[in-house]
Length: 299
Image 1 (cartoon, rainbow, N blue to C red):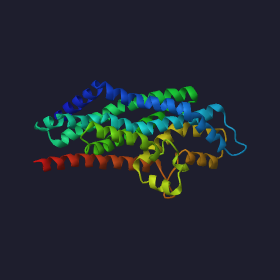
Image 2: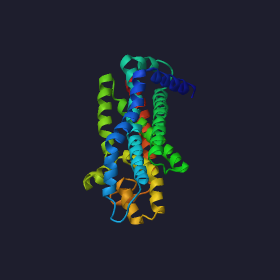
Image 3: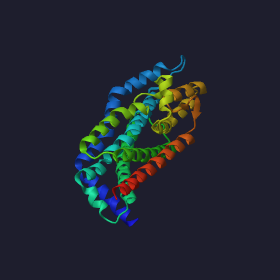
Image 4: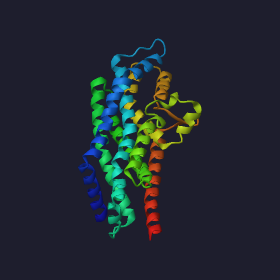
């Protein structure tokens, strides 16, 4: 445990000392918030208005609350994974410059080295993503606040779990990389594609039926649905209070992916947590196992 603690401190300090990696990771959520609010805010709002049944009119504050919740959940769904990829560059850098070989010369176990990178990346990513949460909540407070303290706490739990998933996924991917060019290429692919396949950029409900079934097999989809649910629960509760019919609310929740379906069956919030937690456990186990197998082969 002492060796693991030293490795975590070492890796975390190196990440924050590298201004390039740190600033790149930090500005990602801010840029996404700016782009979403500038270009997609009105698109979300007009789409939501056009989907409303005749005879139901919502105030601008409620509409802004819905849009704000969508923006926040989309940013967090993407950032928790893409920022983790950026934060995990240190592992590849150590492999590229030979520092990893020096660390393996010590008596420290290979599994301990692997966990040192994992937890350091987890800590760095959490710091940045919780800063993004604070920034997003400030935006919602300005546009239309309907979230309770419980919603905020559940949202923080969602972010923690998604960051654990993003860190585990990036650790497995980065294990096979050995140069800066490779990590740059992978980072570009993840940044450009992940938001689409997890339903952050476009609601899954708007995908074709076949594609909806395909993405329902991906664990990141359930992370997006969790942050959607807890970001929008307050504003949907307000709609219910003012008399919006339950059927209409259910259709709205489905349209923004608060309701998620697996081959026609609605997935509960508990099941979403279970899928994401199990995936994290499997990926972390695979990452540690890869390091152990690699050590045995090198002997």
